[in-house]
Image (tube, rainbow, N blue to C red):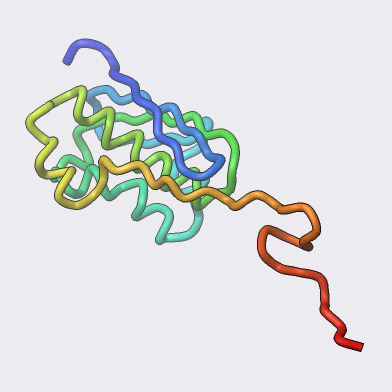
Length: 129
């Protein structure tokens, strides 16, 4: 692999652009180290999961641009983006990543607010008398 590969990951309102290249395992998100950007351990694990699955945590340098949504959505979008970028590096990783479900885009979104309701489904208080 001579140059970097890139992929896009999405989750809820979060969108991440992932750039992957051979290196010593540095992962940066919006210019910060991913452990600084995602201080919670479970979010760090989400970002590392595709690399741990294929046993190559220290083989790639990854640069992630994350926009929109919250931290959790961005971490899960980064997970999908990294998985897709790894496929561009080596297409034979597909069965391994697919069995764990790392190539599936989570389609769940926030339900829209309906007219005559407080939120999407919550109604105003009902009074019989």
